[in-house]
Each structure stands twice: as C-alpha cells, then as structure tokens.
Image 1 (cartoon, helix red, strand yellow):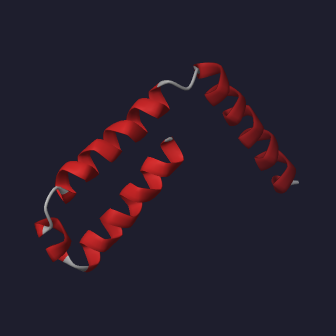
Image 2 (image 1 turned 90 degrees about the vertical axis):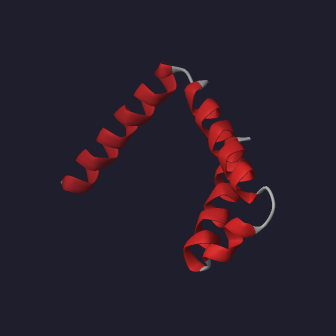
Length: 67
C-alpha cells in the first residue's frame, strides 16, 4: 500500500513541477494529500525493530565497501 501511494504521489509531484496546470484539475490536490497521508500512516505502522535491523544491515554494507 505504501509503495502504491508513494509512487502515485511521486508521479503527481513530478507532473506538478513540470506543469503547474496539473493542480487545476479537479481533486488533484486532495488526492495528493490523501496519498501522502496513506504513505505516512504505512510508515508509522512499521515496527521499530524492522527499522533498527535495516540500519544495522546498512552499517554492515558500509563496512564491507569501506575495506
């Protein structure tokens, strides 16, 4: 769910940067807000243990590439 909402939000943001008229389409701003909220809620629901394990793995990869 987070990947879907994040990717849709990224596409809408890129389209908005390229052409500001995208925001004049009905409900685009509301859709961008809702997609951002969904991505934020999905991120909050991930337990801290998962984030900590990702950080440890990142440090391991950094140590391997530094050698």
